[in-house]
Length: 240
Image 1 (cartoon, rainbow, N blue to C red):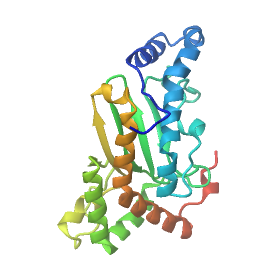
Image 2 (cartoon, rainbow, N blue to C red; image 1 turned 60 degrees about the vertical axis):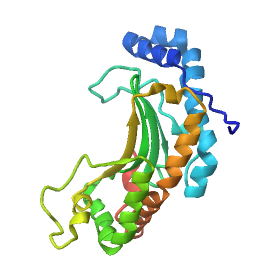
Image 3 (cartoon, helix red, strand yellow; image 1 turned 90 degrees about the vertical axis):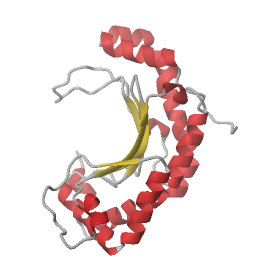
Image 4 (cartoon, helix red, strand yellow; image 1 turned 45 degrees about the horizontal axis):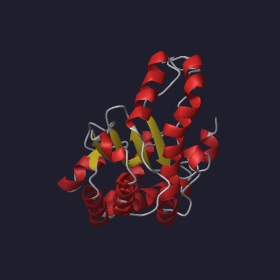
């Protein structure tokens, strides 16, 4: 087995994370802050450290800063209807720096109290821009289907949470139609076997899946760069 930084996220750490959310108390959080850091935050950052070489190989512009990549346990509730201050769902993104590349496709890993998951996602702030992905699919159907097959080989399932009801491309091959309705896309895997995140073997699992799905990331990032080159996506438009 490889000598990884990550040694697992323990059940007792996840239980404490849930108790922290249940109490939703600054006092409780401060009392257990170091335990949460050691049991949740640091292991999540270690995942980035252990995958950073692979992610940089997939995309030389990938941000591999473990501190910026992991969601904070403490939520910023300003302007949010949900006023619960603490999370029990923690995630991390593997992506380009968002201020320079807003809306770029990304890999992710996350866990909840009862399940974990990972995959590859392409969401855009302006769904109409996703038609540029459609154009690439139509132009390179074999490459697209090979990328879909790669995601299936990685164990990922296709999903689309927002789509066009109208058939925008009636002459397109039927096998492409499910993807040509999409305003966003994800290829993800989820499991309720939480014992699998309590071991360094999780790193091997993530490395294998992310590498196998590389053709889809390359397809997505090429479409994204095309949007930037056309001026559809301008970083300054997304600065907050």
